Every structure is written in structure tokens, then in C-alpha cells.
Image (tube, rainbow over all chains, first blue to last red; front, side, top):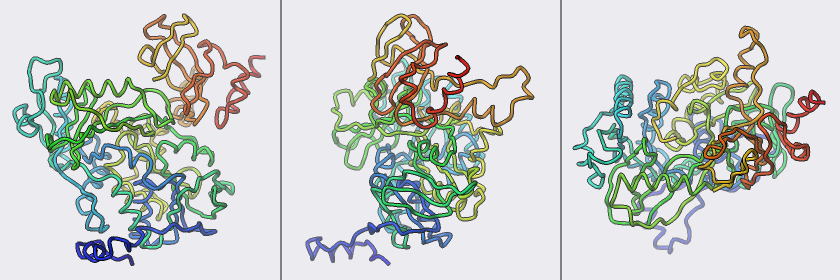
Length: 417
Length: 115
């Protein structure tokens, strides 16, 4: 058992000039065989390992990662947490995740800095207003705490918004989820990693998967840059690189990988205490606790593995936000980066068994995976442990593309795609 | 930013001057009777996509130039275009030879049919 983080542990370590902090997780060499192996140590992979160990008693498992843990999209997103999707299946999984975030810092003894500061989606055309009203009815039927708000309330919550009725895209209202907000993205990966490691899960970094070993219709192991690992269960949770891993097992995916960019400004005094999404003009913004404005937009339209997006996409996002928040027009940008997101045709994720026995896949979160990490990990772990889809994961199976049961969140445009 | 050149009208521009059309050479199940198409074939046609890290074959449209669709071979890591070719054509043989993963065998059958 690891020593707990607390104010007393900080005081105790301060006496020692902070030289004796224990490592948050081990860096073991891979064993020859595991009961299950998760490929990909991002938030979703680590959460899966954590819940496999905690809820299903599977502790002889490993998480293997080509780079470093939390170094992919988990460390590259804009940290927004919300659950106001249109379809029932989406609401179920995203709301499970959002509600788990509420108690996650306590559960993992790691500060996730979950900040339910409220989130609003601006309605800037008559059509968008109606679409959001439809979403709000769907969400309220599902029991979510959400409501439509008027332009006056928008101005009250976020005074820096331009509510000029004469501008190209005037604010006609907004869809507000007061329990939405932001979290500390790195801490989510680190907290789950520390929690899983404490229960005996091996997290093996800088270990690239080079092949998936099959014996007929089932998996028997993995070839990696650190040698062969035997296992009967593999969970592939590699986001933008999911197609390349699944190709190794001969399973073809309905995924295209694209680059999504984000940027942060120089830190300024508090100006915005909620998350604002402007979907018509493609931009969203929140302010971090350090004071930086965290800005995200749409993806580049073409397949891309370079983690380097186009200037066009950035310019588009920034132009939209300057129109919405005139106050930021002379702000300088501090950093900008790209992540490779795995887009499905219906913009909903895939949490599924495959036609290969023992091979499971959790991917397709596209532009909005961070918010779902706890829920995704919980139901995917349950799916892997029991070899049948968890009821919340069931609608997100790979078979939906064959059966035509799409979970269409792209036309619903809950986020700026 | 990537620079695209249209093989039809030779106009060159960045991605805002062109429209991306996704994976090239996706074959629609060849039948006139819908009952002959299995769910798997329909899924493959509509949703399953090659998504290689490296050489990829794509469709693009010359939006602000001649308006024609064309094919391109592009590297998805370096983002460099390797070749442009017509919308009814197969990629140049030397580019096909460099293809890996699911693309490696993809053209063999079609090359045979062509001969």
C-alpha cells in the first residue's frame, strides 16, 4: 500500500526538503505472461487497468505504452467535462463518467482538480437554438441537470462575451450544464496510474507493440520492443493509432485518424469562470487555474499522424473566438499543439469485443475522449473481465456499423467537429 | 499547411483551396440487386477505412480551380504528396510498390484485371 497524500505528508516531506517522496508508480520489466494486457497508457487505458484490478480482482495485468503514460491525447486535450449529448446511449456513458469525476480525487487520493464551473454551448443561429432545445429536452428526460438560458443570463455568467445583437452570429441563448466543467488532464492519467500500480498492475512504458500473436481465432500474446508477452486477453486503447495496432491482429476498423489542435494564451487575471463552447463558429474556451485561456477548435479535414495541424484551422478558431470575446484580440498565445484523434463515421466511440477471441477494443472517442475516461474505463474493464459487453458499453459495439444501429452524434453537433 | 497541386489544371494552393474526399479506390459492392449485398460488404463500403501511418491514397477536389476530382498519394506522417493521378486511374506502379499494411495487396487484383 502506498502512503497517502495529505497535508501531513506534505509537512513531513517538507522537513526533508522534499527529497524522499516515494515514486508514484514502479517501472517494471514485463513478465513473461499476464492475465490481461492493455495496450496504451492514456487515461482510458489506465482507467481500464485500475477498474480491472479494483472491481474484478484482476491484478496480474499490464499496461504497455510506446511513449510515456499520459503523453498522447490525455495530455493534449482542453480538459472539458460534460455529458449533455443527444442520444440516450451517449448520455448514459458520458454522465456515468461525469458523475465518477465528482468523487475521483477522493477515491484515488490524487487531486484531479475537477472543477464543475458550468459549461455553456452558445446558440448563434436560429437553427442551433432549436437543435439545442431538442438536446435539452432529451437530456432532461434522461435526468440531466441542464437548461436553456437567455442572452441576459449568458452575459451575467460570462460578462466578456460579445452580446451585440447586430453581429454576424448574435447570441440567441445558450444551453447550460451547471455541473459540467474542467479537470486536470495529466492528474487523471497519473492518479489512475498510481492507483492501478498500488494494486499490482505493471505499467510498462517505452514498450512498443510490434505484433499481436494469434492462434487461429484467438489471441495468445503480443510481440513488443521489450520481448514477447503471453496473454489471453488484450484491450487495445490506442486512440489515433488504433488502426495500426488492430491491423496487426487482422481486424479492420471504421476509423480515420486526424489532427485536432489546441492552444493556450499567456496567463491573465480571471476573466472567465465557466467553459464556453461556440459550435457554429467552431471554437471553445475556458480559463485554467493558472490564468491561461485554453482554446480549442475543429480538426483538420485530412488523415494525419503528425501531431502537427494546419495554421488554417488555428486561424479559423481564433477568428471565431475574437468575434465572440473581443477582449482577447490582443492576447498573445503561449503554446499550441496537436493530437491525433480517432474519428468514427457516427462520431461515437467503440467499446467492443471483436471477432477475435480475447481481443477487445476501446477507441473512436475522436475529439471528446477526456470527459469520458472514468466511465469508459469502468465499463470497458467490466466488458473485458466478463467477456460480454457491459450494458452501457453494448450500444457502442463494432457490430453497430454492420447492423446500421449508428449512434449519431455528428449530425446532432454537440461539439465542434 | 499542406500545398496541393491539381493534376488536371495544374493549379496549386493550400488545403483551403481544395476539398478532401477521404480514402481513394473504395469499391462499391458490384451488384444491381440489393439483396445480394451482405451486411459485411455494406459496412466495409460505408465505414471501414484504410488508416495507415505513412503512405495513403486519397481523393481530393480542386475546389477553387477547375472543380475536378483527382487522386493523390500522400504520406500521413510527413504530409508530403508523393504523386497525383487521374480520378479514373490507379496509382503509378513505383508508388504502389512502396505501399504497406492493408494497401500493400490492395491493387494486385486490379492490376491483373487491367492487364
